[in-house]
Each structure stands twice: as C-alpha cells, then as structure tokens.
Image (tube, rainbow, N blue to C red):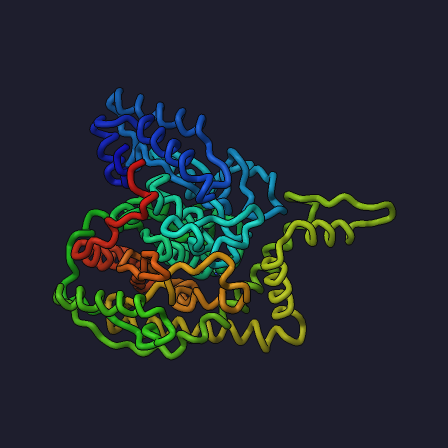
Length: 493
Ligand code: GLN
C-alpha cells in the first residue's frame, strides 16, 4: 500500500482524477480499520455517510463542476464539536448518547468546501486535560510509542493525522489543546486568534479562550483548512468581521527584514534537552535565512498557568451549569421522595469525571462572594498585563518562537498529579489568555528510552496575523525535513 496522501495532494489528485474521492476515502477507512483498534483515535466513524459524500464529489468532478477547495479530503472532528449526524460526547459519560440537532459552523464550512467528515475523535472530557487520558471512554495512544500519550485535549485528532488515518482534523483550544498534541504527535496544529473561527457548535469550556483550529501534515495544508473555516459568523458574536486573507497565496514569500523574538523564559533548564536543542537549531535556521533574532523578556510567562486556572475554571463552572439532567444528556433516576435538587446532584455526580468536577469546584470557588475580587478579578487584571506584555513584544518582532511543550510525549499514567499535567501548557496558555495566534510545527526528535519521539516548535504572532505566522512557519518547513518523517504506523500499510 502507498503512503497516505496529505491534504494538498488529495485535493490535487482528486481534482485531476488520478484517484477518485471514493478511493482515497476508502483508503482512510481501511487504515482506520487496521490501526484504530490499537490507537483509539476515533469515538465513531461514518463509513457509509463518508463514502456517499465522496461519490458526490466524484460526480461533481465528472460533470465539470467545482467541488470546492477541500474536495475529497477526509477530515476528523474532535468530539466536542457538534455534528447533526452521529453522536457528540465531549469524552463524557454525561453526553454518551447525545445527538446534536445542528452542526458547528466550522463543520458546515468544511463540508461546503468538499471535505468529507469521516468520524469524531477522542478528547479529554469537555477538553479538560493535556493527555486525552481524562476521556470517559479510554485514552488514545501516541502513534510514535503506544505506551505514551498523544497529548491533549485534542489527542485523537492529532494522533489520527500523525498515523495517516486521515489527512486533516479539527481540534479545539482553550489553553494549548491543539498545539501541544500536534507537538507530541509530530503534526502541524494551529490555534487561530480568538475570534478568527466561529465557536458556534463548539461545546463551551472557557468561552473567552476557546477556539477551533486545524491539524494537518504540513503548514500549507493547515493554512488552507483555516481559510475555509475562518471568518465572520452571525451565530457567534465574538467572531471577527475582519476579512480572511488567502493564506496560501503568499505563503511562500519570505518576509523581508524578518525579526524573530526568542523569549528568554521559554528556554528553561527544566525543558527536556531535546526541546531546547530544537529551538536552538530553529534559531540557526532563521538566522541562516537572514532573519534577525532578538532576545525577548516575558517575565509574566510564569503567571499564565495560575491566571488560566482561575479564568478557565470560572467560565467552565458557569458553562457546565447547563448539564443539569433536565435539558441535555444524562438524567439520573431518582428514588422515591427525591426531588429536583437530587436530579441535578445525581446526574452531575454520575455524569462528570473527576477532573471536570475539580474544575467546576475551583471555578465556583473563585467566583463565590468574598473570593471574586481576590481571585477572579485579579486574574482578569493579570490577563490584561500578559496581553500588554505580548503586544509590546510584537512591536519589536514579527513572531515569537520557542518550544510548544516542555517535554516530548510522556508515558500514559505518568502525570497523576493534576498540577504536573497543568504545567504541560506553560508555553501555550498565554496565547489563549491574550487571544493571539500560534502554530506548532515538527522541529526535531528526542530519543527517550530507546524510542524516537517528535518535538514541536511553536511560532506565535499577534492577533489576526495568521498570514505572517504561516509564512514564518513555511520558511522553517521549507528548510527542514522534520515534517516528512512519520511514525512506522503512519507509513503505507
Ligand atoms: N490543558 C489545558 C486544560 O486542561 C488546556 C485544555 C484545552 O486547551 N482545551 O485546561
């Protein structure tokens, strides 16, 4: 069997009728069948539906009609993004049988562009986690080493793309859930600026932080995917009316007088040595391309995690109040004499996992009378300072580079203490807090216990400057070959 096709190759080959959409989709389904029992990327797949959709694409092409910019591209959807077919569980027992009456705007835009929705992918419950272990239905495995996590919370999407089960996937971010698993699985993952992509149909976690974004095997593919899903949406008042540039059109043009910032705080001695090594090599690559590399000081980096775990949990405690046993999902059965309060308490106690309960309790606490000012209001002030610090950095440079995550993929079960898990997002979380955009791209490998594990490089740009972010990422990708390496499982067969 041949190597799995990426997004752009699929679009090209299907449009030129070298292969049919039905054939490429069939190949994805075959690979899912062969590997997903081991990897557990998918919650469910839609074989009949996706083959029907592929047939429609082939018919459009045969009759000379434009099938759309993503025609024939099989795309997986994180299971916290609703579809009006199949189930959307958010990795939670609470929603184990939940069926949405509508699809998310991002899903509708993908479908309108000719993409084929192949299935829903595993995630940490309600996207709370960094390893996909907090999924009520079992964890996803990293295709580079089955004993390791794929990262999270969009781990199923990242692992599916890395293993070549499908060329593209959507994930969601609140604090790093696309970039971190992309880094740990060796794929490209994009966190768009807050407001770039409609959140309509993304099950809310922290509404002032959440964004949907794409995964794919190379920078250009993610640029195309983002172009399709981005843009104003009347159903999400926080989506920006700003025009969406054609990211692909200028992606190969290097940026003149490029200034790259390297935050001092990102190259900590506590990072895995291979992670710092990858950043140092990236600095050399950019210097070799004529860029000026500046050291940047971001002393507020360390406050990101604390700030995030106040704001995100506060918003989560409010957003998750809708899961009350009455309107959505699980409804507990009551004993004789029990009333409405018991229905809420029982449904929530039975339906939510431990991490989700922890977040709800934390969030309720920081919003409670007497603590609101001390925690929530103070966190909002720190949020403003973090944003100002990043704005000042972007006045000096086009992009910031650094590690995506402090370490390569860790072992399943290794981070039992919640705080150690929270620290995985040290370098990604401030982008969500400040609403800027970021991308993780393959940038090296670490040898850990005799295994080869991918390492990601993060590139961050100011809000709504995804065009620059893609161009900088593409400059690096063109000069390196890390993105061409696949885990054994991601090769043909
Ligand atoms: N790991 C972070 C958390 O658990 C971020 C999750 C996310 O981005 N969805 O909250």
